[in-house]
Length: 147
Image (cartoon, rainbow, N blue to C red; front, side):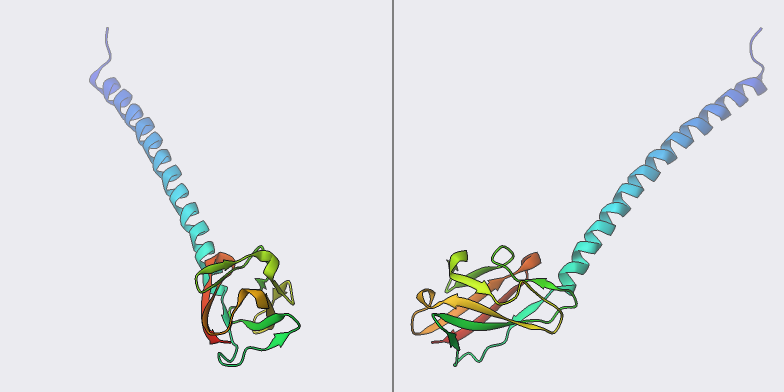
């Protein structure tokens, strides 16, 4: 004796519920992965938007301190900016300044604070120049000046 028509319907119904549960589980896992990815990327974008700095010197009057030219870096973002040779890269007229030839007066600056960027005089000759500072999260500022 075989199953009745009702018994067959019950078996197919239970099988379809199991398959639907498995498919919905896969969809939930995929959606959770996408949401986690969006959340992480959102945090990175938020950090980039909250981190910013600007060089605020008078372009025609760059001060000196001993054998260094002094540039003023102001934090105009809402997060603290780490100011070290490891977190910043400097370029003068497209040429990288080696880390031994520049330093900062502070290791970090809070929002609205200013720190001194000291660049060795040997890196800059007389004339017009462009200083490009690349900081944390690849935040960039360019400053055109004359010595």
